[in-house]
Amino acid sequence: MIANIWPLSEKVESETEIPGCRPARGPSVATPERVPALQAVDYFLWALQRHDERGESRFLELVWPKVSLVHAVDETDSAPYGAYYTKKRPLV
Image (cartoon, rainbow, N blue to C red; front, top):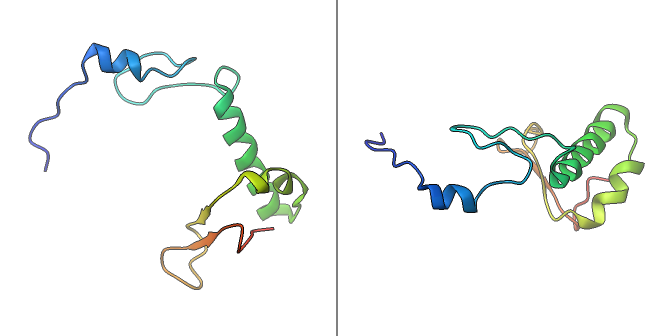
C-alpha cells in the first residue's frame, strides 16, 4: 500500500505536457485530430481490428514493416499470457 502520493511539481508537469491536451489531475484528454501520434495509434488499432474481424490484411500490411512487437493478450490458446507477434513471427 502506498502511504504517500507526492504531487508533481509545476516544473515537471509543464515539461511533460502533451501538446493538444489540457492539463488535468488524473487522466489527460486528447483527440487524434489534435495529437498526430494518436492518429497513428488510432490507424494501427483500426487496421488490427479490420484484420481480426474481417480477415482483411491490406491496411495492416502498410504499417507492419514499422512494427516491432504485437502482444495479443486475448490469444490464450497456447499460453496464459497471450501471443507475441514479431517480424520473425508476423501477424500477417
